[in-house]
Image 1: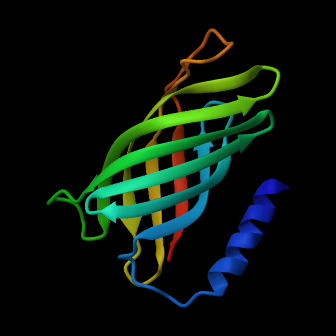
Image 2: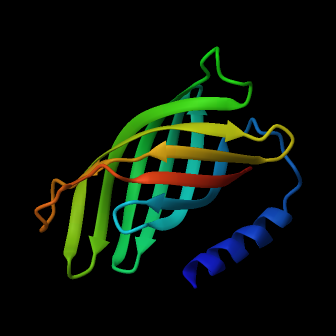
Image 3: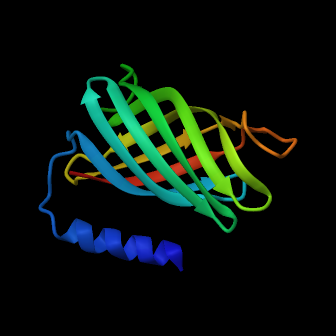
Length: 155
């Protein structure tokens, strides 16, 4: 139910903008993650200076939510196609996961690839997003199995 509301709002919002080039400083969209209970949510990415980006993630599941703030370094290796990029970085997260684990906090890592669509104002990314909970009531603190897909509209 929540995902359909998010998708509906994004479609309405995207249809009200004209097409822009893929080289923009700000993008926002939806994210799905496999692993650690299958999180879903929103992503916002901002380029403040080449090659540096900031990304914010708000992720939900049936138990609660988590917010991550990440600094990412994006490069274009010579052997990659024109619109394909590699990014990596790190940051921190804080989350509230209900009775199972009321409050979590810790460092995040991220490494992935980003494809920027040439003639549409969109980009897609596939990444690995491991997290470690310094503050947690569970014995398992490392979540290294988080694979994510993001679809973003570029403003």
